[in-house]
Image (cartoon, rainbow, N blue to C red; front, side, top):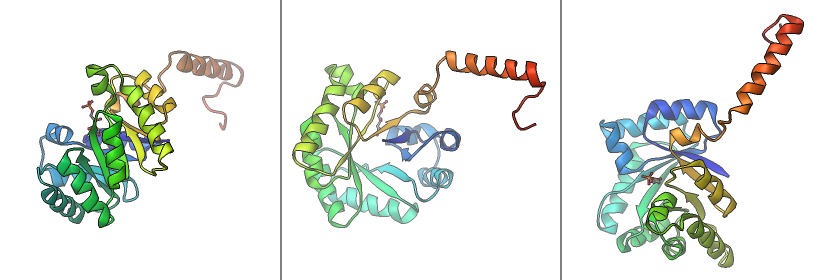
Length: 223
Ligand code: E4P
């Protein structure tokens, strides 16, 4: 199981990367635009925040496969470390995935709404596929089912492509796709913080501490 941060907010990324078991960061054009800054400078700061080893995902914008390949190579020249190129599953996108795979450039097939889109992307050589769980739920209510179908198809055809389930509105959706076979999830900062939030936990911790202080008069066990 790998957990990615779905954000382009450098401060939040640095904080989450310090506290949580993070494998990398997925960005998309909307997330980058929201930061309202020169995008290469932003991507370089994200890289600095997570280090060279963790995967950073950057999406291409061009319509034609050749344009996507050109963009991918440009970004990879500008931003160091492990970089994965996000490519939408249009016809041109599938061609771009094939071209990039032939040059050993890792790709994530994005904007996935059906298991067949994922299957074709995997056959084209995508390293990852990103089904948009909440957006599928909003259309058909079957986000988790799509993830489960992709997982079955990849197993049946022995495809090594991994699922990074994306687009979540609540922790239950994340929980459900993990059980449905997603190898990884990419989640917004506000939802990642909710993963471990449960009121009984801090209450228990407070009681343990009060008892300890009552007996030993100290705040920590090593004092
Ligand atoms: C991830 O790669 C996607 O860009 C993202 O998860 C979409 O999420 P949203 O539906 O919350 O915008």
